[in-house]
Image 1 (tube, rainbow, N blue to C red):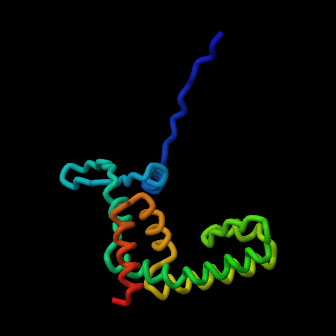
Image 2 (image 1 turned 180 degrees about the vertical axis):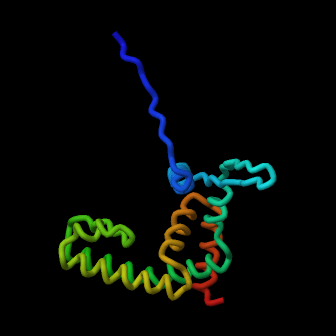
Image 3 (image 1 turned 120 degrees about the vertical axis):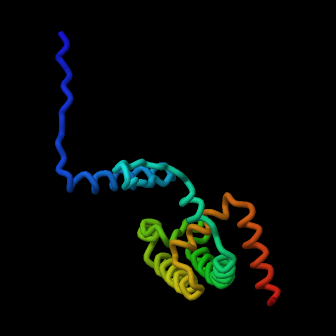
Length: 168
């Protein structure tokens, strides 16, 4: 015999509804990459949820100044990265050099102490260089990720790297 299914009715206090809706919309945007927004019509007291990806596209749009700052950062970081890689390679010998991601502390925590010191030093220097070139680490990482799937941005960065290396 089947038991009847009852829906539970929950009454939310008005002051709890807004944070709940905002939290839900934020979660949807994080998961989907889409950006929900609430458009309120004060004349007839209605609200409409509009979902778009325009803010996502704008967040990934990279200005010419950011391309210059990014390219300067990459050029300054590269010799430090190579030196750190060579130091770690001397320690590891025939084994592979472990993957190091400065924005993922777990990738550093699993390293032996002497390799971790080299990696942390590299990360600290890289962060300082990025910030000296007027970028945040978050923005630097967004540009890095975006250029991997955006051929136009790749081209712009490559052209700027060449221009900087030629000293123009």
